[in-house]
Length: 398
Ligand code: APR
Ligand code: PHB
Image (cartoon, rainbow, N blue to C red; front, side):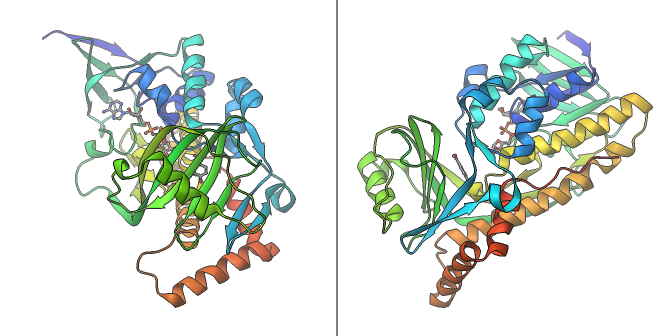
């Protein structure tokens, strides 16, 4: 069959937050790119995921001129609440570290990025099939794919592997090159979106004897809630009444606070995993976001890490195209991994501090409560949550 040959500077696989932000960063630098996405546009825009943006993520979106709707509709949060023993404790980010976070759904970010790409004529091809990467260890890599039944080959200088955990980029790296670090947790999250106004302004991370629960939100009319559940959970076993009854029990507080109950408009189960690939580069292929690492959602780091990776990558590419220097790209993996591992540590720590561990004994549980007491009553303890939650600095490549 005839192959249609095209060319660009950077071929990007995947139109999630990593691929789309990379495309915008490169466009702003005058570097050409093409984004190849396996799913259709409405699927990508409708995929409900987390929704807490670090200040650094907000800054990147604003600098790219993509922050108008986020500034209008996003909710600025000055802190979070950590609850245990029926009481909630405020961790004041603004007071402790002078920063805030913004609650704005990941799929809203993705919608803004796609609309912005269309307005700027950044090419995104949806519904591509049979994506495969070639010659990634040479100086002229290429991506083959089919689109609307036609075969294509895209020649490029570099490839951004932004295709998530189940994509083709990571498996394209020869066996034996990557080292994988992984932990699978013995529980999952059952998440709902409910048509109910949030009953307070801040998120509540609640440890309870019945398991962890999280109160979050999406807008002044939509509440987002999660509860810890068993790994094999079948969503059919959780009719709406059971979800609400369990959430209300876990979130119960001495002061009578409770979330408002409303119509459930979305329900899903998410497994919890920590995963890191080292290095995040092989030849001219650079892995970014979920293609390279997964964090459990307790620290709200997934999308933020994806965006900080591609920020570093865009700086490395900028140096290459400005000066012909590889030094920024050569540092990509080690610079990202330093930050990734700290986010891994924070996400693992929040997860282990807040959940009921199935194999924990009474000693472990008492120690866990002491830790929650410490981080909410000591300024040093609260500061470590605040500093990590709002996001550690993104180091530049030069
Ligand atoms: N070819 C093209 N596209 C692909 C392929 C493929 N073979 N495989 C996967 N994709 C696409 C997916 O359809 C998805 O749109 O790559 C995209 C990857 O996007 P995400 O999974 O959102 O990953 P990333 O951009 O790294 O963002 C990380 O997403 O999973 C959440 O919590 C995570 O918030 C974090 C964020
Ligand atoms: C969410 O609102 O979806 C959310 C918030 C905080 C988290 C995880 C998910 O830690």
